[in-house]
Length: 387
Ligand code: PMP
Image 1 (tube, rainbow, N blue to C red):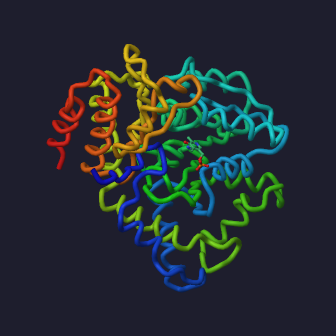
Image 2: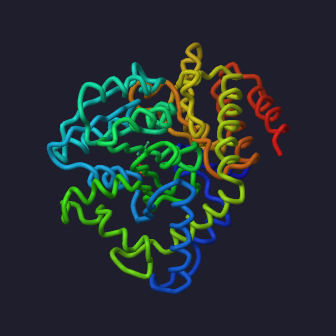
Image 3: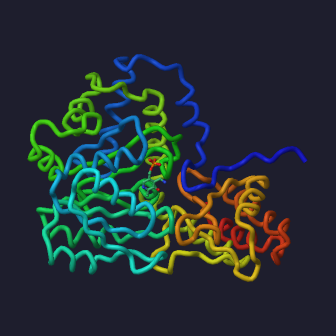
């Protein structure tokens, strides 16, 4: 057999379609090029509108820069902050807050596989005043989705508190809207549900977030992360502050074109349908979805190995890769006992079938009791109902 091409089915980067690759392959132009400036400006306007934001930012960086930006522009040393965490990526905010000298309170999900709830946040906010609250929309270590709209309703009663949402593994795959959900800063990046290669931080901010930034004074310690430095560029990209990632910005513009063509609502619905198909298919061959029902993310899943099979984790993932789909290892409480699979962005029926087929073949090669085609049958039945 010739070598099977590997689909990138980790929870980001996700598969990058040809038309987006083409934008990255274009001859790079000067960042002051009139055509590029017009493209950049339109991209930012589209993002503002699609996410109900006062202003969006598109900056060279990864999701982590977005987390830094969110904290830097809305808090100062000595402020109280509440970090809501459902796993390893929620936990990431903790060290960042400590670096900044923030007074940190942690609100953790009862156990991995579930989420912090709006009621839990409401109780905390009744006890103490917080400058900011952070919530991870989709927790990449557990495949859990947090109720960000419900938490937003609680935050609406606390205008003194800035609501920060880490939507790295969610935005463009799971519904989020700043104006509708009372969110002040929503951060994400290019390589997840936008289906672009890694390289861009995408951040959305509300009016209240800008007011908070202004209240922090003229100079905050961070330069590259400062809203005030970037706002003039995002409003008029012919201006300069830091060199824009020209080809990546074109690539994101193409991603947004694809999203608009599909329709945001349909895109969110599709991700829900896709997730259910993947989960049902993998459950049909004995895997267990780690996230509890009602908390399952539309963008990625953690699949726990059937306990009776005593699966060698590293060997399993390496076999799935060799069979044509790169999947990721688990973190924290799930390390070694399952694998993570992304199912977000611009993935079509070929990709979905290819990914499930690779998992099935790996199971068969490992000698697990899996009927060839059992998972595929579920996926096929579901996909046959789709346009
Ligand atoms: N937050 C979440 C929820 C993530 O999944 C990740 C990356 N997996 C990050 C933050 C960090 O993003 P990046 O790796 O792009 O810096």
